[in-house]
Image 1 (tube, rainbow, N blue to C red):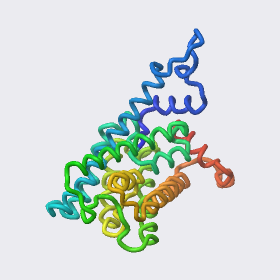
Image 2 (cartoon, one colour; image 1 turned 45 degrees about the vertical axis):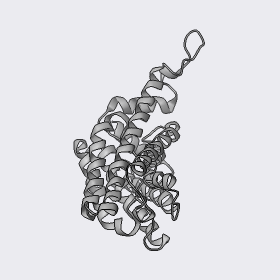
Image 3 (cartoon, rainbow, N blue to C red; image 1 turned 180 degrees about the vertical axis):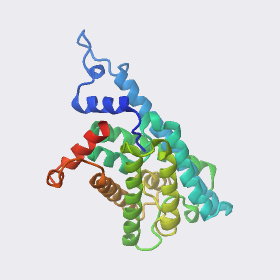
Image 4 (cartoon, rainbow, N blue to C red; image 1 turned 90 degrees about the vertical axis):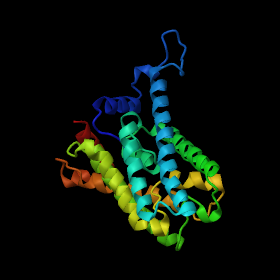
Length: 279
Protein backbone atom coordinates (compact mmCIF):
# COMPACT_ATOMS: atom_id res chain seq x y z
CA UNK A 1 0.00 0.00 0.00
CA UNK A 2 1.53 3.29 -1.03
CA UNK A 3 1.71 5.93 1.69
CA UNK A 4 0.60 9.52 1.16
CA UNK A 5 2.12 11.03 4.29
CA UNK A 6 5.61 11.41 2.92
CA UNK A 7 5.66 14.65 0.97
CA UNK A 8 9.36 14.25 0.33
CA UNK A 9 8.82 10.88 -1.31
CA UNK A 10 6.10 12.25 -3.60
CA UNK A 11 8.47 15.05 -4.59
CA UNK A 12 11.17 12.49 -5.36
CA UNK A 13 8.73 10.52 -7.51
CA UNK A 14 7.85 13.67 -9.44
CA UNK A 15 11.51 14.37 -10.05
CA UNK A 16 12.13 10.82 -11.19
CA UNK A 17 9.19 10.95 -13.59
CA UNK A 18 10.44 14.22 -15.07
CA UNK A 19 14.05 13.07 -15.19
CA UNK A 20 15.16 15.88 -12.89
CA UNK A 21 16.82 13.91 -10.10
CA UNK A 22 20.40 15.12 -9.99
CA UNK A 23 21.56 11.94 -8.30
CA UNK A 24 20.93 9.84 -11.39
CA UNK A 25 22.80 12.10 -13.76
CA UNK A 26 26.39 11.70 -14.91
CA UNK A 27 29.20 12.70 -12.61
CA UNK A 28 31.33 15.72 -13.33
CA UNK A 29 34.17 13.56 -14.62
CA UNK A 30 31.84 12.00 -17.18
CA UNK A 31 31.62 8.62 -15.43
CA UNK A 32 28.38 7.22 -14.04
CA UNK A 33 28.57 5.01 -10.99
CA UNK A 34 25.14 3.36 -10.92
CA UNK A 35 26.03 1.17 -7.94
CA UNK A 36 26.86 3.96 -5.49
CA UNK A 37 24.51 6.76 -6.56
CA UNK A 38 21.85 7.75 -4.01
CA UNK A 39 19.08 6.84 -6.45
CA UNK A 40 20.46 3.33 -6.91
CA UNK A 41 20.74 2.84 -3.16
CA UNK A 42 17.19 4.08 -2.62
CA UNK A 43 15.60 1.82 -5.22
CA UNK A 44 17.63 -1.12 -3.92
CA UNK A 45 16.27 -0.54 -0.43
CA UNK A 46 12.73 -0.40 -1.80
CA UNK A 47 13.17 -3.62 -3.76
CA UNK A 48 14.60 -5.43 -0.74
CA UNK A 49 11.63 -4.22 1.31
CA UNK A 50 9.23 -5.53 -1.35
CA UNK A 51 10.97 -8.92 -1.45
CA UNK A 52 10.91 -9.27 2.34
CA UNK A 53 7.36 -7.96 2.68
CA UNK A 54 5.98 -10.20 -0.07
CA UNK A 55 7.91 -13.16 1.33
CA UNK A 56 6.28 -12.94 4.73
CA UNK A 57 2.83 -12.16 3.33
CA UNK A 58 2.98 -15.35 1.26
CA UNK A 59 4.76 -17.37 3.94
CA UNK A 60 2.17 -16.57 6.61
CA UNK A 61 -0.92 -16.52 4.40
CA UNK A 62 -0.16 -19.56 2.26
CA UNK A 63 1.42 -21.23 5.29
CA UNK A 64 -1.87 -21.04 7.15
CA UNK A 65 -3.57 -22.67 4.15
CA UNK A 66 -1.00 -25.48 4.05
CA UNK A 67 -1.11 -26.09 7.80
CA UNK A 68 -4.90 -26.20 7.78
CA UNK A 69 -5.01 -28.68 4.89
CA UNK A 70 -2.32 -30.92 6.38
CA UNK A 71 -3.11 -30.74 10.10
CA UNK A 72 -6.59 -29.17 10.18
CA UNK A 73 -5.69 -26.92 13.09
CA UNK A 74 -6.16 -23.43 11.65
CA UNK A 75 -9.76 -23.43 10.33
CA UNK A 76 -11.10 -21.23 7.56
CA UNK A 77 -11.75 -18.18 9.81
CA UNK A 78 -8.19 -18.54 11.06
CA UNK A 79 -6.90 -18.41 7.49
CA UNK A 80 -8.90 -15.23 6.83
CA UNK A 81 -7.55 -13.56 9.95
CA UNK A 82 -3.99 -14.61 9.12
CA UNK A 83 -4.14 -13.02 5.67
CA UNK A 84 -5.53 -9.77 7.06
CA UNK A 85 -3.06 -9.60 9.94
CA UNK A 86 0.09 -10.35 7.96
CA UNK A 87 -0.73 -7.73 5.32
CA UNK A 88 -1.44 -5.17 8.04
CA UNK A 89 1.78 -5.98 9.90
CA UNK A 90 3.96 -5.74 6.80
CA UNK A 91 2.33 -2.47 5.71
CA UNK A 92 3.32 -0.89 9.00
CA UNK A 93 6.77 -2.53 8.83
CA UNK A 94 7.95 -1.46 5.37
CA UNK A 95 5.24 0.82 4.01
CA UNK A 96 7.37 3.88 4.72
CA UNK A 97 10.22 2.36 2.68
CA UNK A 98 8.68 0.83 -0.43
CA UNK A 99 5.00 1.75 -0.20
CA UNK A 100 4.17 -1.86 0.73
CA UNK A 101 2.63 -2.91 -2.56
CA UNK A 102 3.41 -6.66 -2.37
CA UNK A 103 1.13 -7.01 -5.37
CA UNK A 104 1.93 -6.53 -9.09
CA UNK A 105 -1.67 -5.51 -9.79
CA UNK A 106 -1.46 -2.71 -7.22
CA UNK A 107 1.87 -1.53 -8.62
CA UNK A 108 0.51 -1.47 -12.17
CA UNK A 109 -2.60 0.44 -11.08
CA UNK A 110 -0.60 3.06 -9.20
CA UNK A 111 1.61 3.54 -12.25
CA UNK A 112 -1.36 3.93 -14.61
CA UNK A 113 -2.83 6.64 -12.42
CA UNK A 114 0.52 8.37 -11.97
CA UNK A 115 0.99 7.51 -8.33
CA UNK A 116 4.15 5.51 -8.98
CA UNK A 117 7.09 5.86 -11.42
CA UNK A 118 6.47 3.73 -14.50
CA UNK A 119 10.15 2.91 -14.83
CA UNK A 120 10.13 1.14 -11.46
CA UNK A 121 7.17 -1.12 -12.26
CA UNK A 122 9.19 -4.03 -13.78
CA UNK A 123 11.63 -3.95 -10.84
CA UNK A 124 8.81 -4.03 -8.28
CA UNK A 125 7.05 -6.89 -10.07
CA UNK A 126 10.27 -8.92 -10.19
CA UNK A 127 10.85 -8.29 -6.48
CA UNK A 128 7.30 -9.32 -5.61
CA UNK A 129 7.48 -12.50 -7.67
CA UNK A 130 10.86 -13.31 -6.14
CA UNK A 131 9.46 -12.94 -2.63
CA UNK A 132 6.48 -15.14 -3.49
CA UNK A 133 8.62 -17.86 -5.08
CA UNK A 134 11.05 -17.89 -2.15
CA UNK A 135 8.21 -18.13 0.37
CA UNK A 136 6.49 -20.88 -1.61
CA UNK A 137 9.77 -22.77 -1.86
CA UNK A 138 10.24 -22.48 1.90
CA UNK A 139 6.78 -23.88 2.55
CA UNK A 140 7.36 -26.72 0.10
CA UNK A 141 10.57 -27.65 1.96
CA UNK A 142 9.08 -27.38 5.44
CA UNK A 143 5.78 -29.18 4.81
CA UNK A 144 4.90 -32.34 2.94
CA UNK A 145 2.71 -30.59 0.39
CA UNK A 146 0.67 -33.02 -1.70
CA UNK A 147 -1.65 -32.02 -4.56
CA UNK A 148 -4.51 -32.21 -2.05
CA UNK A 149 -2.75 -29.77 0.31
CA UNK A 150 -1.66 -27.31 -2.39
CA UNK A 151 -1.51 -23.83 -0.88
CA UNK A 152 -1.97 -21.96 -4.15
CA UNK A 153 -5.21 -20.83 -5.74
CA UNK A 154 -7.29 -23.07 -8.01
CA UNK A 155 -10.88 -22.31 -9.09
CA UNK A 156 -13.34 -24.50 -7.21
CA UNK A 157 -16.12 -23.84 -9.72
CA UNK A 158 -15.76 -22.57 -13.26
CA UNK A 159 -12.96 -20.26 -14.35
CA UNK A 160 -15.56 -17.63 -15.23
CA UNK A 161 -17.04 -17.68 -11.74
CA UNK A 162 -13.62 -17.26 -10.13
CA UNK A 163 -12.68 -14.53 -12.60
CA UNK A 164 -15.74 -12.46 -11.71
CA UNK A 165 -15.07 -12.85 -8.00
CA UNK A 166 -11.40 -11.91 -8.39
CA UNK A 167 -12.34 -8.78 -10.32
CA UNK A 168 -14.89 -7.72 -7.68
CA UNK A 169 -12.73 -8.31 -4.61
CA UNK A 170 -9.67 -6.77 -6.29
CA UNK A 171 -11.82 -3.74 -7.15
CA UNK A 172 -12.75 -3.35 -3.48
CA UNK A 173 -9.16 -3.80 -2.34
CA UNK A 174 -7.78 -1.13 -4.69
CA UNK A 175 -10.70 1.18 -3.97
CA UNK A 176 -9.82 1.07 -0.26
CA UNK A 177 -6.09 1.41 -0.94
CA UNK A 178 -6.71 4.46 -3.13
CA UNK A 179 -8.84 6.03 -0.43
CA UNK A 180 -6.51 5.54 2.51
CA UNK A 181 -3.18 6.04 0.75
CA UNK A 182 -3.70 8.70 -1.93
CA UNK A 183 -6.31 11.04 -0.45
CA UNK A 184 -5.14 13.68 2.04
CA UNK A 185 -8.54 13.70 3.74
CA UNK A 186 -8.23 10.08 4.87
CA UNK A 187 -6.65 9.08 8.18
CA UNK A 188 -3.39 7.70 6.82
CA UNK A 189 -2.23 6.14 10.08
CA UNK A 190 -5.17 3.72 9.92
CA UNK A 191 -4.48 2.71 6.33
CA UNK A 192 -2.81 -0.57 7.24
CA UNK A 193 -5.78 -1.61 9.37
CA UNK A 194 -8.26 -0.70 6.63
CA UNK A 195 -6.38 -2.67 3.96
CA UNK A 196 -5.83 -5.66 6.24
CA UNK A 197 -9.51 -5.80 7.18
CA UNK A 198 -10.52 -5.50 3.53
CA UNK A 199 -8.40 -8.54 2.68
CA UNK A 200 -9.87 -10.44 5.63
CA UNK A 201 -13.41 -9.73 4.43
CA UNK A 202 -12.58 -10.61 0.83
CA UNK A 203 -11.11 -13.96 1.85
CA UNK A 204 -14.24 -14.72 3.87
CA UNK A 205 -16.46 -14.08 0.85
CA UNK A 206 -14.44 -15.43 -2.08
CA UNK A 207 -11.99 -17.79 -0.41
CA UNK A 208 -14.12 -20.95 -0.71
CA UNK A 209 -14.71 -20.34 -4.43
CA UNK A 210 -11.65 -18.71 -5.99
CA UNK A 211 -9.15 -18.74 -3.16
CA UNK A 212 -9.39 -14.92 -2.94
CA UNK A 213 -6.01 -14.20 -4.48
CA UNK A 214 -6.35 -10.49 -5.38
CA UNK A 215 -2.64 -10.71 -6.14
CA UNK A 216 -0.91 -12.32 -9.15
CA UNK A 217 2.25 -12.88 -7.08
CA UNK A 218 0.22 -14.81 -4.46
CA UNK A 219 -0.88 -17.29 -7.13
CA UNK A 220 2.16 -17.38 -9.44
CA UNK A 221 4.70 -18.26 -6.73
CA UNK A 222 2.99 -21.43 -5.46
CA UNK A 223 2.10 -22.44 -9.04
CA UNK A 224 5.74 -22.26 -10.15
CA UNK A 225 7.09 -24.09 -7.11
CA UNK A 226 4.51 -26.91 -7.20
CA UNK A 227 4.00 -26.95 -10.99
CA UNK A 228 0.23 -26.54 -10.77
CA UNK A 229 -0.92 -24.06 -13.39
CA UNK A 230 -4.62 -24.88 -13.68
CA UNK A 231 -6.65 -21.68 -14.03
CA UNK A 232 -3.60 -19.52 -13.28
CA UNK A 233 -4.62 -16.95 -15.91
CA UNK A 234 -7.68 -16.14 -13.80
CA UNK A 235 -5.45 -14.90 -10.98
CA UNK A 236 -3.38 -12.75 -13.30
CA UNK A 237 -6.13 -11.19 -15.41
CA UNK A 238 -8.78 -10.83 -12.68
CA UNK A 239 -6.75 -8.85 -10.10
CA UNK A 240 -5.24 -6.54 -12.72
CA UNK A 241 -8.66 -5.68 -14.19
CA UNK A 242 -10.18 -5.28 -10.73
CA UNK A 243 -7.46 -3.05 -9.30
CA UNK A 244 -7.38 -0.77 -12.34
CA UNK A 245 -11.18 -0.43 -12.17
CA UNK A 246 -11.04 0.23 -8.42
CA UNK A 247 -8.42 2.97 -8.80
CA UNK A 248 -10.40 4.46 -11.69
CA UNK A 249 -13.59 4.53 -9.63
CA UNK A 250 -11.95 6.26 -6.67
CA UNK A 251 -10.35 8.87 -8.91
CA UNK A 252 -13.80 9.64 -10.31
CA UNK A 253 -15.22 10.44 -6.88
CA UNK A 254 -12.12 12.16 -5.52
CA UNK A 255 -12.76 15.76 -4.52
CA UNK A 256 -12.03 18.34 -7.21
CA UNK A 257 -12.89 21.96 -7.94
CA UNK A 258 -12.90 21.43 -11.71
CA UNK A 259 -16.11 21.38 -13.81
CA UNK A 260 -17.50 18.13 -15.16
CA UNK A 261 -16.64 19.05 -18.74
CA UNK A 262 -12.96 19.26 -17.90
CA UNK A 263 -13.02 16.06 -15.88
CA UNK A 264 -14.38 14.13 -18.83
CA UNK A 265 -11.43 15.07 -21.01
CA UNK A 266 -8.96 12.27 -21.60
CA UNK A 267 -6.54 11.99 -18.70
CA UNK A 268 -7.77 15.18 -17.00
CA UNK A 269 -9.08 13.45 -13.88
CA UNK A 270 -5.73 11.74 -13.39
CA UNK A 271 -3.84 15.02 -13.62
CA UNK A 272 -6.28 16.87 -11.40
CA UNK A 273 -6.19 14.21 -8.70
CA UNK A 274 -2.40 14.20 -8.76
CA UNK A 275 -2.33 17.98 -8.27
CA UNK A 276 -4.89 17.83 -5.46
CA UNK A 277 -2.91 15.11 -3.70
CA UNK A 278 0.34 17.07 -4.00
CA UNK A 279 -1.19 20.28 -2.66
